[in-house]
Length: 111
Image 1 (cartoon, helix red, strand yellow):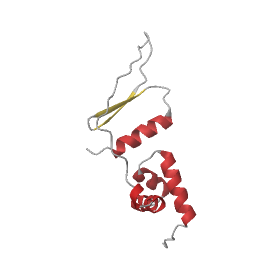
Image 2 (cartoon, helix red, strand yellow):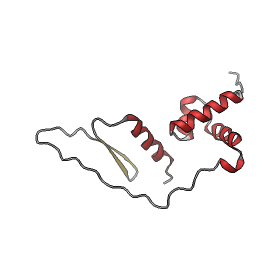
Image 3 (cartoon, rainbow, N blue to C red):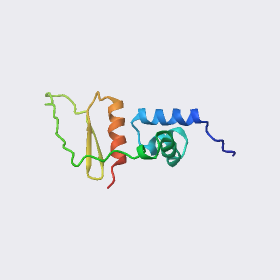
Image 4 (spheres, rainbow, N blue to C red):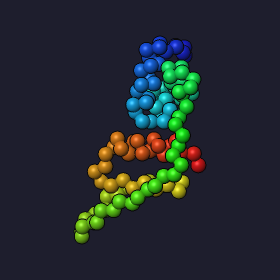
């Protein structure tokens, strides 16, 4: 199998698509069939060395619980995802793109 080098236009397009996707470099690279380190390197080259670092994470996060009262006789159609000590509840009728963004953020959280 012969590897070919991506053109500068292809690199720029991958970086733009990755940044617009909200996915981690690992998740985007897996979908695109490229190495995540290569993707980060392309962004570094595109932006310049001083601008490639991620912004500092917020010092603290605050979560609030939102609950909708259930109606008598109505089935609970909630999906609960547990990842380590993090729980995400997904109600029926959720926005798939919102869930993708939440999971992308969670995939970047270091234990």
